[in-house]
Length: 270
Image 1 (cartoon, rainbow, N blue to C red):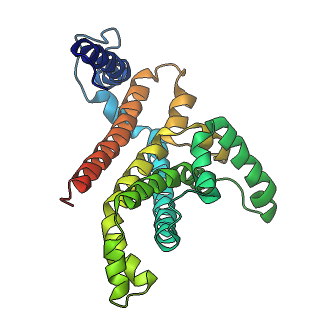
Image 2: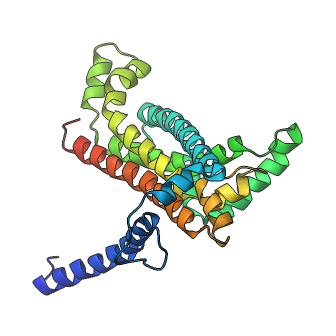
C-alpha cells in the first residue's frame, strides 16, 4: 500500500515530534552540564567546565563510572560468548530459534524489568547466597547479561536468517567438519553482527536500572543508581547534570556505532 503525500508528511511530522520529545530533554541536560549559573538554564547558558571538574573530583561519581564500566564490559563479554555458542548451535542444528530455546532466551527482555529483577533476586537468595556468595559486581553482571545476551542473540539470528547455506554446503563437500565450517565460513560472516550486538549490550548496561537495583549488593552503585541516590540532595543538581551527560554519551555512541556496523555489513562492505 502506497501512502498519499499528505499521509507521508503527517507520518514525518509525528516522527519529528517523537524525536524532539526524546532528544530535546537530553540536549537541555547537556547544556545544563556546562552551565555555571543555574538561574540561566536555556538560553543563554554560561559555558564552563567547572562542574565537570567538580564531578570528576567527586569520588562517588568516579566510583560509579568505574563500576558501570566494569559491569558493562563483563555483561558484554558474557553476552558475546553465549551469542557465539548460540550461533554455533543454530548453524549446527538449523532450528533458527523456532523452538522453546528461543522463547526462553528472548523472554527476559519481554518481561517487565521489575519481574525479571524480582526473579533474579529470588534466584540469588535461594541458590547463590546459601553457597556463601553474596551480591556484588558479579550479580550485577549476571543481571545485565540476562538482557544483553538477548540483544546479541537477535542480531546473530537475524544475520543467520539472511545467509544462504551454499558456502556451508561447499565447505562440507570439501571435507570440513561442523566446527571448521563454523570457524572459517559462518563465524567471519557473523563477526559484524556479534560486534554490533556487543556494542548495544554495552550501552544497555549503562541504561538499565531496575534489574541493577535488585541484583546490586551493598555498596555497589552504577551511574544510574548514583544519579537517583543523589538526585534530591542540596547543591547536587549541577553535578547530576554532568553525570547524566556522561551517561547519555556512553549510551548514544555505542548505539550509533552499532547501527553503522550493521548498515555497513548489510551493504557487504565489512
